[in-house]
Amino acid sequence: MSQNGHAMVQPAPPGATAMVFGAGVLPAGHWFELHEHPQHQIAWASQGVIAVEVRDNRWVLPPTRALWIPGGTAHRTGTSDGAAMRGIYLEPDRCSVSFGGPTMLRVTRLLHELFDLLTTPDTASARRTRAEAVVFDLLEPVEVIPIGAHQPTDPRARQVAAALTADPADRRTLAEFAADVAASPRTLARLFVAETGISFGQWRTQIRLAASLPLLAAGLPIARIAGRVGYATPSAYVAAFRRAVGVSPGRYFAG
Image (cartoon, rainbow, N blue to C red; front, side):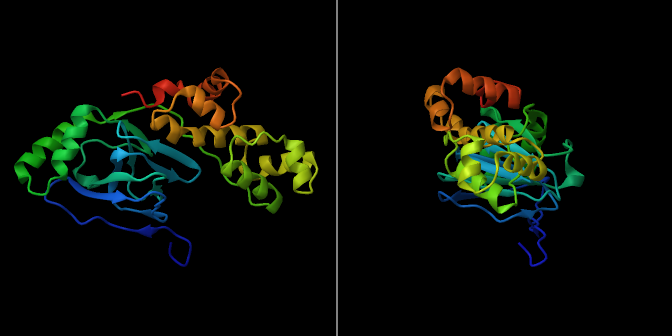
């Protein structure tokens, strides 16, 4: 990040056609700093799982999902367990489609194969143009509500937030957390609403659901995911997920 706190601008080099592809292997735990591109970007991993953060929203992307990031949108991208990431950059004045904000996209088997073809550097320009036209036709939004929560700044609330982020299955109540940080339950509850815009309970739910996404993307059974992120039963996890996101966990990454 630059000294004035703004995201770094990282333009992709122009290509002969509308799209420029970059490919690389991200090691486990690697994150790019907050940055933006003048071009639109499609963030996608052919193997593994990546995550993209835009402000307080977080998208987790297995190979069946990608994220459209409009040009000029500050974002962070990274991976917990390592991934083969493709950076797909699109010149805005040459795009036949566009989305007004970050948009999750469905990556079908055909789209996967086209991305692989276009990553090959020796693909002829005329062939690239034809393949890109098909890609534009195949870009299909997935209507889901992004998951994420703003971090509080008050030291007491931040200490609680750090504990829940490190262990979403922590079952301590608001009153128990309040005692641990030398605040009254009422004060702690007020801090979460004032600094995150949602209640403590809603904030905890968002953190739990965000923690569940990489596990869901990796194909873990719902019963194991529920317990690891703090839900007593799989049905409680499924119900919370559906209320917050609009679809069931099983449909979120369905191919």
